[in-house]
Image (cartoon, rainbow over all chains, first blue to last red; front, side, top):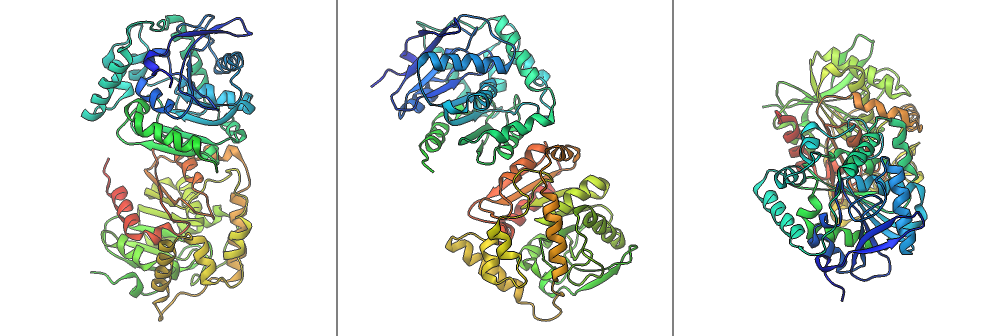
Length: 282
Length: 282
């Protein structure tokens, strides 16, 4: 029996690219599930309730990509380089074929890995995702980047993007924050301003309108599960439909009364859907 | 109180293009809902239960496009010309702005009208639809065209495409067929082989892979409701997601245990969803 995510120690692995990657892991299983984090997030920004639910049936590995949080190196300003850096981590960990869950900008990185190194991904989960080049997403809406793009983001600003205005969603958001901040020792290093700047450059580049790039997704042949909250102000759910329309074998689910952080708000239900998808032997 | 659809008389209207269009109408309301029929379908192939449910709150007009069933003229072999012919009918009827429900190939025509003459459409419903140029839909699957593309299609072949293999869906299919065949007098003229050939040419043309054409849908600015059965073998539901991904304001619903004829199988629920969409004053 492994420790819960909130007790999992910070670990470091040295990769061939010279980066020391910070990571935590919990759970046991043959094919690891690797998590790719959201904009400005580090290891402490995964809701332990979600990670533990996922880890009840499998090994789960969270890590900081190059330059992020407790990892060394510099955060690159392209999703392509982030994918390259993530593959270097997976290689250093000798994980073999993995399942990949990419959340927000992490979903961009996951798509890029799926296109550049498809052989290492068994099944792919894209949470609050968007495809490169889709119209209407060149940078986030002013109120969104105004909330989560400032030097110091408040819990209220975080809640306004990751949760809806309903009482139940806000309550779920408060509880998720409490779980994320319950760990007081051995916390990860905070992400810095250079990471914020580079990641948002990458987000803006990803959103440069280019209809022809949408066609790339037709090359993704592994099983894909696309998921989003129905009220996500950061990455609108219609991009989830677009992904599911461009990846013929993708399944898609849009969760009610939830926003960018639907997977934290609905951690039990989402983990169950992920488990059903990953365990599907079709 | 108007007559039910099954008692509505066949009528003719002469349009400026020289075509006499066959149509039926029922219900009352300010903005008419006009129906665009599926491959090889005529006025008798609308399930009266669906039309009557729609007509409980509004005027509903079904018609045969040029060359189809009881209408004069020749069935064209392009969706573009079908849209042109449909606009000629709408003009001849002096309907003003309408709501449009396009089913299957009718959804192709509806999209084309929305792009060519957006001013005449208030709200748009696309049932079992697909966008022009999407990958993987150059003609229907061999078992589908083998079932519904033969000179004489049997009820069993129809059921195999329009309904699923579940007992409840098959039962619903039998009941829909009974409703459609209950009318014995004043039936519409059967569609002929020339219509079948021309319509399938148009279907194949619509499915010529051309990724750049998907971008056209971004020009559709009216409210759109996209709907399909989750097990449609003729036009796969992932094309509904693609439509909803390319038309940002579109809402989408995929109905459980239903196929190409989901709107007949689930006539009450679908009509309620259509009513909610059409009555939405957002």
